[in-house]
Image (cartoon, rainbow, N blue to C red; front, top):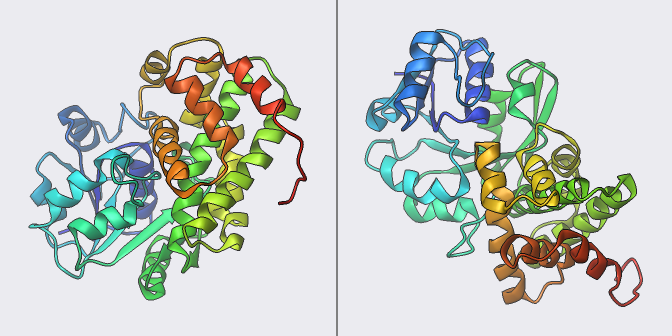
Length: 331
């Protein structure tokens, strides 16, 4: 039995596993890819998702889900957002009813438009859910570069338990009881980061990116508060913090994919070149539908949606954004 189990051996899940194992925890990782399982157990490296990082011996990978999760008190869902419902269903019969579910994916479910914690609660109604978010590139977490994140839950006591487990002198963890705000901030920033990458790829400069980030934050606040989040949450780690790092870093899959799209590469080909899930694509589609339902103004999301799904030229999308009717900055 381990202390904590990760469902999904992607880059961030692996990085957190490495960090936790260095601090004495026994960690299990389940992954559906047998090559990932073998590389972790034999080569002590996750070559596919986090190359050149040594994985300590107290991390064990499994191809069988039951063996990975059974008996663990903390289960971390480290799969893409679209897989959250499936893996929640799949672990239901194997986990304890009081096991804490920690979700590190960022997005909303495209069909139901539910937040991911709501999806988990649908499938695992008896288990407490904690969301971990914030500016935390896997490549830096794995190298013990100082990083700060936030954990949120409906019941703050469960967030505090996760805080105690994850916090180190290189990985600082804050708590927040606004789970709606933490989830929405983490999801919408991927849309803005993708747009920022498109801007870079199209040849625009720092002024344009600063405008996208600033007005993008307005969109995050508008949709988040409409859903019941606290405005101040978005000026914290899961809002402005995550937005800054994802829009400006080449570690960001969303920004890198956006650069390729801005250069004229098709969305499917750009995502294929990145080699990992680009959450901003699915999030853009989902939030485009959600903002229509809620009647929330999200012009950057509108423009990106047209680029991604209606084959609109990125430069014309920027032109349309710049040519809208004049208005006051705060309204």
